[in-house]
Image (cartoon, rainbow, N blue to C red; front, side):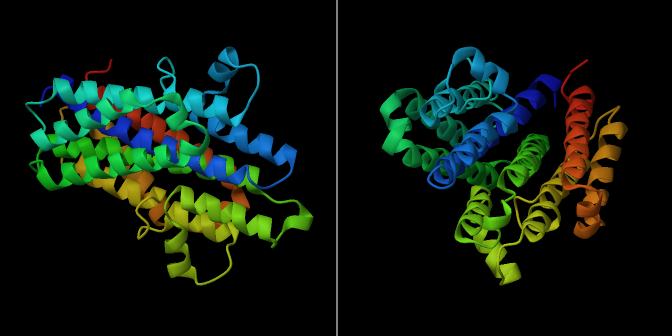
Length: 312
C-alpha cells in the first residue's frame, strides 16, 4: 500500500476514535460538575483541556472557563484541531480520498455522520442537549467501527485502521487516568463517602468500564483497582494493555522496509504492560508510569509515521 493511502486510513481511524473519546471526556465532566466544591469543579473543567493539551488555545479565545464555553471549544470549534467537529470532518475527508480502498458502507457511514454533524445547531450540543449529542457521537463511532470490522477485507487497509484506532485509544485512556486520578484524589473527609464513590464511578463510565469493574472485582471502588483495570486488564477492551495488544497484532501483519524500530517499540510497550504489577507501579508513582507510557506511545506514533506513512 502506498504511504499516502496508509496515512489516510490510519488517520481516518484515529480521528473518529478521538471524536468518541472527546465525547466521553466531556460527558463525564458534565456529570462531575453536579457535585463537589467550587474548587473541585474548576479542576474538573480544566481536566479536559489538560487531557487534550488544548488549555493554551482555549484561553486565547475564551476569557472564562465555563462548561458551555468548554463544550463549544471541544465540540464545535472548526479551528480547534482537537474538537469533535474537526475530527469528524477530517475523518470524512480521509475516507473520501480513500473510497477505492474502503468499503461503500464505511464511506456512507462517515459521510452521513459528517452531514448530521454539520447540521447540528449550537443549542443541540450545549445545555440540555449535550448528553444526547455525546451519546450520538459515541454511537456513530461504534457504528463505523462495527461496519469496518464487518465489511473490510483483512488486508493492509484493515491493519492500518486497527493500528490507528487502538493507538489513539491507548493514548486517551492513559491521559484520562493520569489527569483524573489527580483531580479525583479526595480530601480526607471525603474518602469512602458518596462523593468519592460517585467521582470514581463517573471515571469508570467515561471509558465504559463501570460494569466491567463490578464483574471483575465485586467490591467497593478503590483507586488502585481502577488503575489496574484501565492499565493492565486485557479483558477490558479500553485498557492500555488490551489496546497495545491490538497495536502489536496489527503492526505485526504490516510489512515495511524500515519498520523494525516501530515494531520493536510496540512489542516493548506490550511486554511492559503484560508483566507489570500495579502495586509496584503505585510505589514508583502512577503519574510517572503513565508519563513514560505516553512518551513511548508518542514515539511509537512517530516511528509508524516514518516507517509507513511517508513522514520524514
